[in-house]
Length: 67
Image (spheres, rainbow, N blue to C red):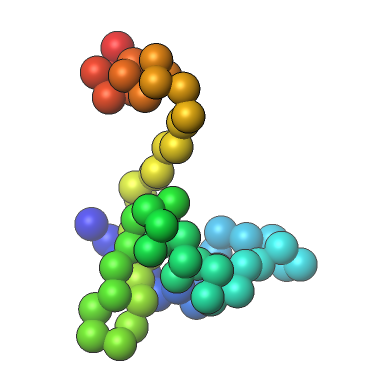
């Protein structure tokens, strides 16, 4: 797991004018919309891991089974 600071994540993955606030990214992590964690007082994102949220039970089953 290669963690990066939220500030770097925001610069690297968002176009100018669409960059979310640092608090928004923290909330995504807290809700499980984005992989990351707080270490000490610093927040980090793991950009290599993707979170897929689906509301359809069949879609979730297929994705979790890998088939």
